[in-house]
Image (tube, rainbow, N blue to C red):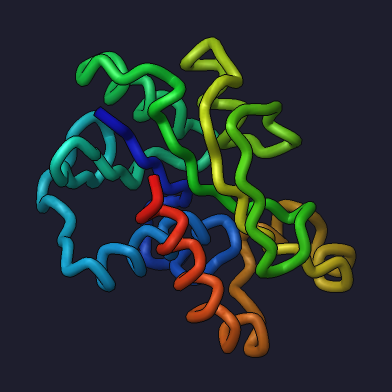
Length: 171
């Protein structure tokens, strides 16, 4: 069994924000693959089981995502090596995708939460670059991650999301 976790914040006001890049990527994957989310929540997440894979969008806020990940991992007996995280990373240039088998949180509070709740850094992740140094300096880190994508960034999203969808497919 595999668990694929998209990072984001619940609520329409967070749609198309940098912190919700994970949600956006998984929603795109669902659209391409004609999947739909379950209408009910389980363990504070919107989810879908498809074959031997469970997809989740935790409905806790970003910094508490680990509670939902741990609940699914425990209930379905999923080892950390089979938990795949899709999250934003403002330290990577916009559009860059970095895949890692394990590693530190690198300042990402959602990853810190998952590491704390699982008790390990040993889980794969796709980090989606949201970096825009000029805007980040202007807004500060908190407002930057909660800001919407710029017009030029939005125009590049379909190509980026297609690449992420292919990576999800390979999982």
